[in-house]
Image (tube, one colour):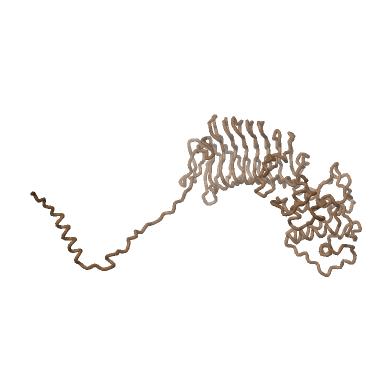
Length: 519
């Protein structure tokens, strides 16, 4: 038998024997675990913005250049990281960035593309052009795209032009837009597929100045000049919009919202000029109903006539619809009396001028205000509802059998009842067309003032000159204390009598000019 010698095995057995007979301590038996020191580096994900197909890095903030970017005399494109301002000065961009469309497999083409907060201001100097030659590419086109709020300023010009788009095409796609100055020309060519938009802004637009000219071509789907899912406010500037023909819908200005937003969308004009030619609809104000009924264009102005608003130009009649959705406010211009039944020497002349100029009351048609007509129970609450901003009413805890949901006063009456300004006349009845008495008006105004945090306590007020009901004493005392019934050209000492439209205009005039309410 041959024995194989294993020297390494002998050494191992010797070591094990020594270890078995040598005493050890508990600490050596259970050594503390060794925890290595690890330096954790935070991961910051930031997608750089692109200009004309160029991914902008910090090194090129002072001068953004690329193969598709050219400049005129003294021209440049720069970026200020502190103010998030992109400045264009005599620059021409004729290239674009491609990206995967998150809503499908097709690509997205963008001339200027940025994410939230990367570009907050677009400053225009000189003459600038952003032209995208789509050349029938199978892609959605967003000439300027940013899921962010953007402010446009400067005294320069930017012309955005898309050429031969084959799919959905948008001149601008933003979450919020403010135009303070400068000239912005948006040109969107005919779209071969889907919709064409000049400007689509989800959270609203404010025009404070400058000049904006939007022209959109034809589309097989829908064609819109300016579209927003919130309010459009025009404080100044010159805005002109024109769209081509579309198969499904076309509108120069389209403002829409879902009722879950609890917002009243609309167009508010405090000045400036607006000219729109939208084919079927110059202006559409609408919402998507919860019940599935298609009401996007419920408040559309179906007219092909161009309307214009300016400080020195009369307002086209096509805009005087759905006052709760449309506010036209004259910009420091004298009020012009258009009522044939209102004379300058009438005691209520200034009061009617005030309520009509501020959109609180309107005429009754045919150039008539009807100052002697009685005021009904639905009209006053509608005025207060408008003063409050025309709020939506969700899940009302009150309902009246005689207030149909199709009535023009439905939401104001439910709002007033929900806020304890009014009550029904018994059971589930409201009597919306019933006349209002002076003491009822005083009580409703007192309740509304109290809801605004105004102190309506009026102790020790002398009411001996007035006739009123006992239940109306709190409202009567407050009304007398603020002079609600003072200075009228008629005897109103009997507060149990019904009030005329001229009276309600006077009461509203005095009420709205309360210092506490103005503040």
